[in-house]
Image (cartoon, one colour):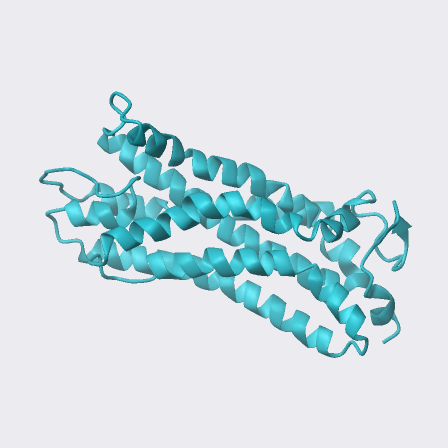
Length: 275
């Protein structure tokens, strides 16, 4: 879990760096801040989509990590080894990078007749499509299918992982042990719920026409507010984050109730071993 958590700060720092500096420069009316080249606009959209898709897959991998830790803890060291973590993280970044290629290609084929004023604080797909004088039907379908694929694949992994976690927790007789096990998932569940809720609303739809101002509010939430909130959300369960990090990874798994620095690793493991 800590290996994947280490990717989030880097990812979200870059994620916000794509849009926030330009947005703040526009707020203070800096010289030239309200202008962006066509190539720069497409580049911003590509990088923003790349980081957004990568975060989706990274959150899915983190859900799988929680599934293994709670449902099959004795095999955690083998199923989530350093090599496996590296390959899963690399796959998230690679698939995230490939995600915007097709949508950006179709966007580059559109014709824009002016006035080319983007009614948004960054170059998102919907306000750009609204400026095009070409037929955007195919582009809308491509955006819809790509967004749906990314969100459905990642959310299915999350749903299946947490479905198995809930099933396992229901078979733990001790209410205290259930709470301890589930508490390691709370922060991740909150982040997933907020992030995916806004993304499904914004991108899994085919119509460009919508409330522009409301879209801006939603965009600010997932592109600016969420990256700021995530460190706070994860720190709410700081003890659970420190626990797995207290010993060198992946050694120490399989001991069950070993303690490091006064923190018990996987407190529910002792019960699951007894099943």
